[in-house]
Image (cartoon, rainbow, N blue to C red; front, side, top):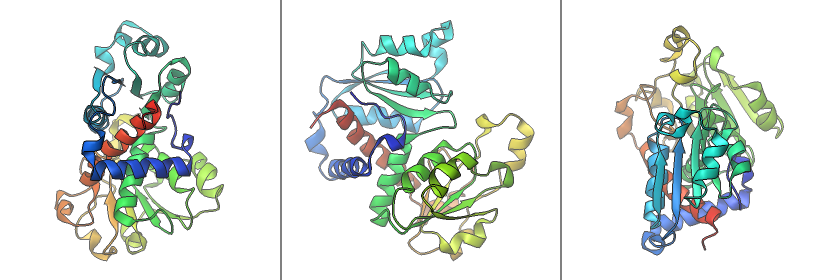
Length: 304
């Protein structure tokens, strides 16, 4: 039995295999409609989520399985003081696989040690979000056709953005990658992420506070939201929240085939006027999330 806690739990060949299956699901959905008949997915979301939770539920339903769970800690026995380990021990008796989001870093890892069924980390604090990264990888593969020799700009909240940390870990394993880190001083990428992935692999990177300046170099622009819920005080959040707003004007110098990604939800960091640009791939990206999660559920349940 295997869980997915961190994107690096998967080898490059396993990621390729998941992407191949996801692409096959997109092309031949009817072949997968009964694959998880009589199987159940529990979604245990101790922190709010729309896309991740619904895409997991849609993924299991499209595989013919059932879904149970809760969407906030208040509606679970945690509100009565039950520990995560106890919740997992109980829910593992009702479901075949569990997708779990938790505000505390490391909670899904602890859960996986107590569980008799596979656990999928659906986001733990500012730490990891491996299925978002799989979604990002499927999108890059479908839109760019490769993971190699790409210049990837990561813009906005690089300090608390777990999607950014996971994507850097994943992309650092491919050849010819360059990173451009675009953020205000206060939201720079943590040095441990830089040391353990970018520097450890000898990857070329630059840090800047100006999006316009680096725009012409980018093959992929990954925008992020400045996350109010990760700040200790309102004042800092208000000062930084509008640091980078992507507009059609700013895209004028971008490559014709650059793609704009965003893990969503967006607040105002991408102007809605950008939605009609053919480079805007964030709604496609959200849709691809369902297919890659279908592939992952099949893999962790050992369904051929």
